[in-house]
Image (cartoon, rainbow, N blue to C red; front, top):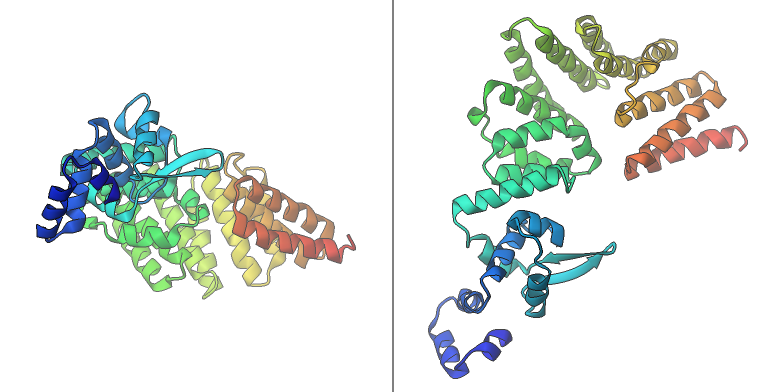
Length: 360
């Protein structure tokens, strides 16, 4: 309000108009907006579209497809219309909630969707923020892209720690708007998400719908892979509640998997080892793990972690403590590489316990 009064040609007239308006807040915002340069409202709208996300200059220039907006950001910050902060040697920009709500509604619906779409492109590539990518695909009305991206980047989203935020976002999607393949991906992703969050009945419901849909698909390599992947998920679902049923599912998946699908075979064998450990069959668990060890994909660090963690646990129970320490350390190092901080702490505790037992 102070800024508006200082810039007003006739402050007394402005105060009189303020007294006559029912929505003082919106009136002041309009007064502010009318005094901005041509470029400044565009930047304000770009910041608003990010819905509270603190943006670096590169991101805002990407959204607006402009070479440099440094001077505009400085001007808006000087007018207290943007809040600038220094985070890890980068300057980021945000808005007060009132300003964000006002400027979010200034573009047309089509313009707003285009900005959300550009934001999704940025976060799915340059920005590498998987949750923001899914969020903006959804806001742009690109629900198929949101579903596909969430399915493809599920492990990264989990490592980002956004499962609780992702669930309601995906629940808001009308699955009837999706094509058959996208609907399948949606069901699988929702099942995995609910399974991760301990919502076992909900997960089972999504997996059962997936199973029914897969029954009517043509017999080909893709369908066989999808059925084997579903067997893996059913194995995870039943692992603690009914290990024998879980093992049956995984064995069924191993029968379906094709010779060229090494990664999927490894995932099934690692899952089988987890189930066998629950059943106290550590020799059988070790056999499954050794079968997949040479086929572990070099670039799939989450899968490597699962294998190393299980090998460490198996060797611990078999009293092979040097080997338990070796694989526990491999799991710990790999977790640090992917910056999985929560699980790194848990793995570190197990690792130190083995070292203590060995007298280190």
